[in-house]
Image (cartoon, rainbow, N blue to C red; front, side, top):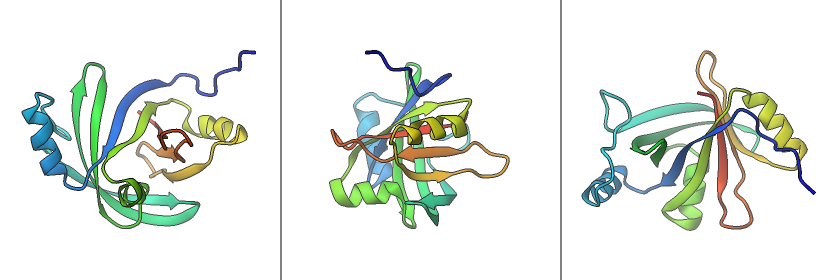
Length: 152
């Protein structure tokens, strides 16, 4: 029996990889021909401060981020820099590697409500006033792959 999809108006945006040292990861991947890596036109790597929730509790953290375009999808490198965060939990438990697949959505709150109604559990989220918000759902039992929904 076919089930109605949970997410409407979403598109694959990026694949998130957690790393211990973002500069080393960039050097390695660029040597293999991936990239160029950059956060924006002015920064190769950028540290972003987040304020949100982790396991339903208030949290603040900083993450270093860089991206490389692979066709229509970005390869997102993430180094947990300061504070408790989902990325650090994964790095500590499993080491470096695939962390999440990120999707863009135009109905973030609605998509979160539909997913949690189906049993998904929010791992971490941030909804800064006037800026795009995001949510990671806890990793799957198979592959421990987290799903991120993010506003454009």
